[in-house]
Image (tube, rainbow, N blue to C red; front, side):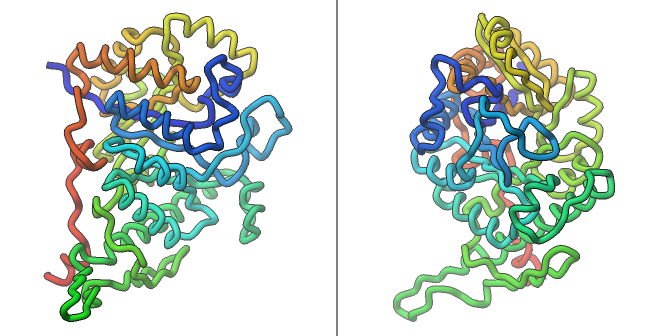
Length: 375
């Protein structure tokens, strides 16, 4: 029997093609409403996808790598990804919710409690896509430092900082033992102070005493994920993440990447235009130039299933599909691709776990401070 693969969808605006907002079934007037994101997440959940990601950044979308552009014909503006996920959580039941949160210019204490809160309101379905910011115009929003040219030295420093950031967040998630809350009305004790721990992190980039103000999340450690394109971010993901998104061009390239990435799960990103007229629609949309860091697929569900299984055989454990157009390509994923993969015995028929870590076969981690206290 074919080994099952994992599927997720990356949600952004009206889709990953910059002209997608002009499609007949697009809903550009609704992208700043909760209903829009709830509808997309529910569609993904109807297809039993492992999780959805929500894009975010510290600056407006831009076609330029070095700052904002002057375009008025592409979607600009976003809602906060963590807050979107928190709103979607009570409207869904099984699908994982993975917002993007940028570590550069922000504080780990804030992100740790926001994601812990998301894990609580979702019942253990929270994740995090860690993102760095190397753009000068984003740094200017905060005025704390100047970001220089993006050479290897600058990139390495950004990811070194990100590694410390994730470590602080993980320690804060563990800073409450699972049974720290007593809630004993008879004795008047709500919490056992001996089971709250100062993390006392003192590093190059952060000095954080702790403990968190939010008890340990239901998953213990929400899923940490990262997008990586080259050796420095690969190394970061290997040390800090549970899951890495990568961008292979083909199966051979996928094998090369898999040899460099050691996280339990490796998801390939792929932009998809998925219906019998996909090529025609893509040609029409591409009158507005579309550039992508990930490979672009256009074709049928059967053809996409062939590609996914070929890359899966090369070592890719799952896929983060980026719908070129929303909701059209997301619906094609859930209503055409998923049934095709099920016919081949390559995708689940129903959710088999209630937490995101459970869906991915990851156990609930032990608390580091309990282990240290018991040792």
